[in-house]
Amino acid sequence: MSAAATLPVLQPHPWLGLMAYLLLVIALILLSAWLARHKRAGSSAAHSLRVRAQLALGLREKLVIVQVDGRRLLLGLTPGRIQLLTELAAADEQEATDEAVSFAARLRELMQRGGV
Image (cartoon, rainbow, N blue to C red; front, top):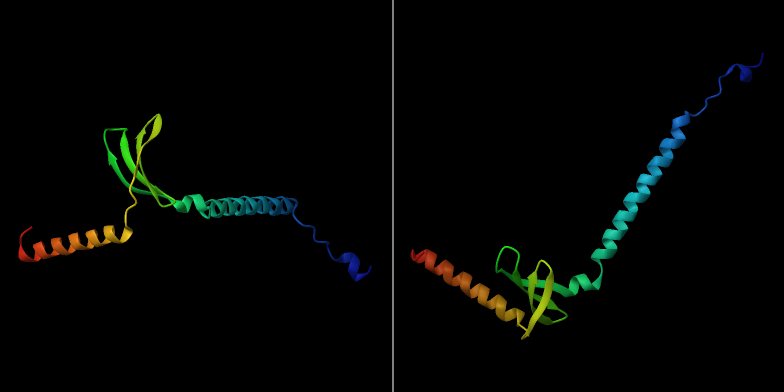
């Protein structure tokens, strides 16, 4: 008898190949989901549309100001309809920021004096 004939031959477990394929399929699914999410987040339409303000008028109705490509639109929203009510004049972002800062400064001043 030779030494090669006495050594047992190692065979892979029958489930090992199946598990490898299963891990490959799961990895492909996760990669596809990641790519789809990043492609959607990178679209220019998502970056050019912003909700600037909203006001609830009832349980299911509201007014919304949206900004699209530099235009400000006042929309009426109901469960079955979205309607353009009017186009608003373009707002100066710096002016809105300045108003918020001046309000915060005025409120801080009143609080320090004990007026609030």
